[in-house]
Image (cartoon, rainbow, N blue to C red):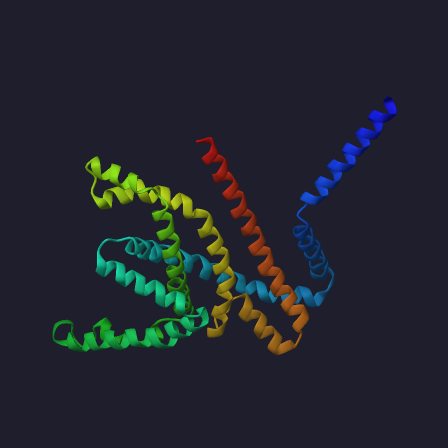
Length: 287
């Protein structure tokens, strides 16, 4: 009897151990191992240390571009998302046109288009208006003296990213708003609220709560896509890597370091988004 219980206990222990092994995030362990190897290189290999110091000069630019562009994208996306569910046909069609154009163009093309087509066109129109208003504002009015050079390539890159992701966030907000039952809008209107009031106080708070996890994933995507601003010469970490490679020709070491930096940032953010989703799920079940 004792022998049978011992065998059963041993079998149960082995089964639990196998289940524990199957639940281990092996992908994360592999990445941690690769990170440890690279960290060892940073500490012991002078070349890796030099490369890391060069690339970290651009990390502030990368984070700044991501934060500013994504904040603007959320605002644009919310406005366009509201337009996508609007009953006004003009507003609906303008919002749909914006979304379809943005979603139909590659990100890199949008960056070039904003930087070298839309920005000069904007100042051409602004100068023409300033010329027409000379009798009112004088020959030194800001609309006449402004030119394309006043907008840095960094600003153009952030505008392009904001416009691009604004189109994607518009669909995210649209889906969030439409996921709320129509009965809630009808109930709010029956209580005497206007459409704007019902959307502001009833629909949007619930919709925003539902779209927060997708927005977190899009923030991670923008962090990666911010590397595209390097094509305009913006000194982010990707551009710093390109400049160092062009001078040293140390491709493996430089791009290993670049990949490590992006992976570190995106994995930390991904784990944060996952934790937030789980937290929201628990709060939702609790309520």
